[in-house]
Length: 315
Image (cartoon, rainbow, N blue to C red; front, side, top):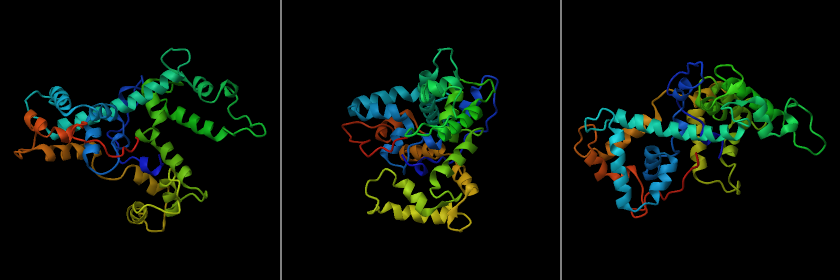
């Protein structure tokens, strides 16, 4: 996946580190990187509402079973139990799905690096499992002839590790691991993600990102760079119109920072509003359980209705 395609748009709340490095970090998750990529369509809506893993499950259910399972979810959407689902309640539900995804990701990596199974990951444990025992306490050793030089990679990881360690105890909890592997999602590590992104995109090392460097990143997974797809022209236009704010032909660090966190609304709130508009048949501004079931194809996919078949952009 290209770097540019994964850049986030807005953070939910400011990070206030706590003694356990836990609750505040969970509140600082950036919605956008875990929102599905692309325009509103059936595939997008299903993934936003269900989360990535459950979307895959629902995509393979018969229509009747998908509808039945959606009915079982409705009480969980209705936070105040008044029988009506508001935009705010849907917004809260979607944010929960995003948080589940990021924490599952963090838990898996944390388990794989917690060598002594004490519930925390030390820097030495991370180095040993990621780079090998030979790098423990010797992270910046020069490579032998013909060996890969890991020094810059290890230095990057160390800077992220220190920043992710919100309570400064030199260990990462599961929640702190989330900000380590996704630094762009949290205020206390976001600066590292911005700096790393600039280095990754800036192929000639001049400290800024040209439109050609931006396009090269977008085409990183394409085998045929000579025959560029039509959407690349639109991306070039967006680069000059929206990314290059001072119109000097390149994107600098400040413009990249705005790219990470522009002014504007929440992607999850936008999606919740969209779902209500799609399903609110009596136009009263909220959804009844029956309206959700009557529009179940908006919320979930199934084999029978052939929803959720479009190409999925990996998160």
